[in-house]
Image 1 (cartoon, one colour):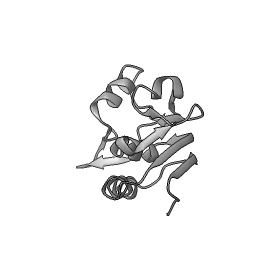
Image 2: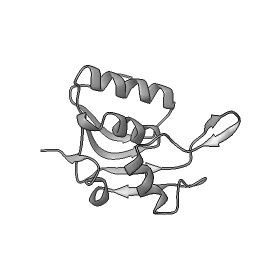
Image 3: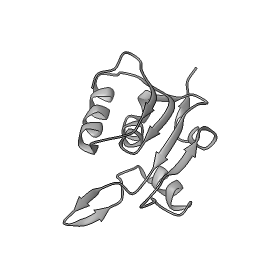
Length: 116
């Protein structure tokens, strides 16, 4: 899935983690930029985390976390977020197995820069 420069995300429901991680690598390698201007869910948050230096958020941004379906050796694994984001999630009860844990802009701005 392609996006402009900058890539503006108004709603992204996530998807295949491998694809989102590869996209994050491409964003960083090619020095592209992403603006989160709405809901960024699941694998979208992982992309925003992995490409953090190239991502900014607006006051409409919200990050949505859940346990997801990552399996390692048959065991369900936690999503591969950076330690600071993982700690934020754990301090709020962990990754929900159903429903979403939402990080609103007011809290997300401690992890991502606000867009100019």
